[in-house]
Every structure is written in structure tokens, then in C-alpha cells.
Length: 271
Image (cartoon, rainbow, N blue to C red):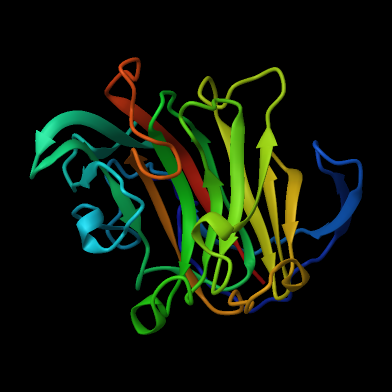
């Protein structure tokens, strides 16, 4: 394990520096804030999945996760393992517990939560119709108020059939599912499945900024929604790869299995 892999909390004042970045798909500058207090660095260097941070969610859409997905999530190493300093999530085409596909979904619920900060992951996407990886967050009060009242922040969503496009979104009461507040980024002269890219948000009391490789492409504030702003409480993280579902459709005959999502690291900085 690297010595700098740790979860730490401190109460030092954050060093703030305002800079101007330009979104690649809009010609306007926007102010953003750098968060410099590192509270989580998950670099997947300990040879296995760290159960002090992550919990596997097991099952299918019948668990109430919805979206008409086709996979069964397992905790098997065939579907999730750490290898060469990376988390490898693998979707397989196989008959398992009544499903035709398997994959993995890991969450930090009740183990690590964050309220405001910069949350980022360096990842390499799969490629193929019907493959749906995501790096996202849910409110820690989900068991009390359910979804979408709890709020959802999609730091990175990706359709396997669109290898140059990433989506950043929020869901909440009155703006969920097909009515989510969202925006996409189209990578020019490259593909998201051929190399690693960093996907992140900077999240403050009244804004969430979305980035790819430090390029700001989406900013959401309370003025952008028609319902309640539910993003001023702690959230936990999720990383998974679904197969099929309303966002991507079913795999086609040309979709090759197994499919892999590679995660090099996840970092969280907060005040």
C-alpha cells in the first residue's frame, strides 16, 4: 500500500484560489474554486478492495434500483477486483441467478460520506452498445426519504455506444429520471475507451460544477431547477457498470463481452 493512501479529516481553513476556465462547448468563462484539503485517496494499491471504504451491493433491478437493467450485481472477483493498482469492474454475459449478465456495484454508504468539495476519479471506459458505467452519488438520508427526494449527482455517466461523450447530471424532487438537469461533453479527436480521463465535480453550497480532465463543461445552481435543491447534506459515492437499461438500451449482437471499466484512483478534497 502506498503511504499516502488514507482517509483523514482536518479543520484547517481551505486555501481558495479563483481561476477562470472555459467550457469546451460554450464560449463563456466561469469562476470555479480549488479545494485543496485531501480527505480520501483511494489508489487501489493494497492488492484488494478496501472494505473499510466499499460495500458491494448484490442483486438486480428487482431490489428497487430500477432502470430496466439486465445485469445481476455480485461480489465475485470475476466481476470486481483490484489488479495492477486499478479497480477492474467486469460485465460478463452469463446465466446467473436468473439474469443473463453479471457485473458489480460498489458503494461507500455508512463508510465514507462528503458534503461539499471536489470529487474525482480517473477512469478508462468500456465500449459497446448497452454498456452503462457510472460514477455517482446519493444522499445519505435515502433510507428515510427515498429517491429522488434524497438527491443524486451523476459525476460521470456514459453510454457504451457513444465513446466520445460523457454526461453530468443531477436528479431531485421534480427533476428526476428523464427530467434530470443534465449536460453532455463531446471529446474531440479522442475516445474515452482508449485511455484514462479524469471525471469530477466541484460542489459548493449553491452550485455543482462538472469537469472532464479539468475542463468545466456544466454548472448547475438552484436557479437551474424547478424543484427543491437537495444538495446541502452529506452524500456517499457509487461506482458501477450496468448492462442494458433505459439510458442505453440492450446490448446488440455486436457488443463484445466481457466489458471492463478501469478505475485508477478516486480522490476527495473538501473544506
